[in-house]
Image (tube, rainbow, N blue to C red; front, side, top):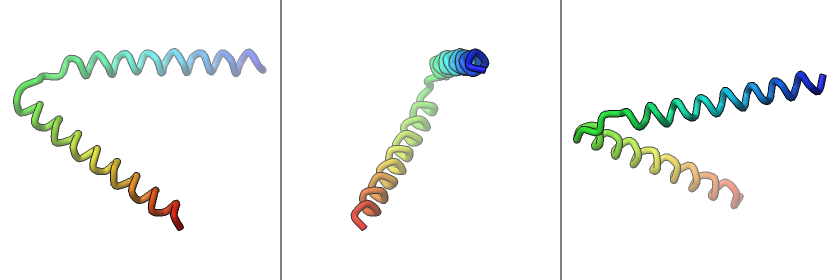
Length: 64
């Protein structure tokens, strides 16, 4: 039973590692035209804004 669990964990780890490698390669291939750069910058700003709001809500909730 232990060997089955270890084997499943090893397979999951290998699949996760392969997925990470493929995602990184795909990100490197994206076109970096001016419009793509503006879109990416806008998406990053929005993501950081949402993350900051979530952090503020969490800090506020911890006080009470």
